[in-house]
Image 1 (cartoon, helix red, strand yellow):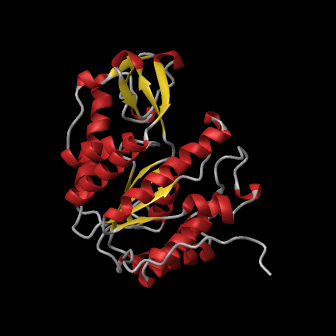
Image 2: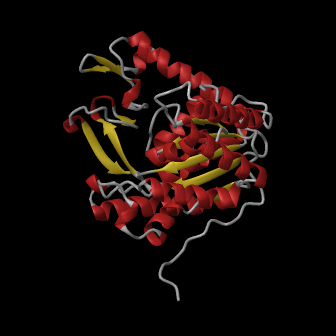
Length: 319
């Protein structure tokens, strides 16, 4: 007898190896998955533009990274004594124009360089809604808490969505390695401020556009993250207190399913051991001269060294 409808991720013929580079971009859920990959000591770069939700803005970001096109002063505006870019998250805002540009362009450089060697790209779309900044007639990635009266909100059309996906794939296949694998997901985070009906419409448009475009390309895949949360983890105990964001248990469940489908056996063991090491590194003591603690640290350092011998890139570099 079954008591739940389990959603599986189709096993990939191509596996993520321990030296592979993984680029991720999109919603806050993309960041949570990227954080787990980083804890597993894989090579990752996540969201060089900060958290972005809609396909139009994500496509714009990929285009700028592909072209290594730096931002200039005339692309910024000032609000509340800060210089901001409508293509970026608020974390890039500063009081000085050169600081904002330096932060933005450093990430452009980093993202361009990393993409050229990337084996995997994970894109997580959050919404089909977009805002247009009326004074400049510009579609924006983030409103930076500027009053709503300056924006017009609308749904991206189906054509805009499919064009954005298509161009994103073209730019990625051009800049990344020849056999780059591109994984598309739809964030399970519900945008309740849009309204429950509107949120469902928004997510449905994303899913429809993805399934229309990716069959046209090799090495493009859909990960049913949205479906796992909606149909498999259909219980509020898998959400944070806001009843919107999946909690750690849900994120770890999705990551495990993703790993079972996409990680090589070597990668699975490598990440599993690194998770255990991270847990052990959290252990604190009031007496660092305690012989038992010294022995514990020596064994832990040896485990880290054993892991370092398995890869060429630096791991546990902050320890």
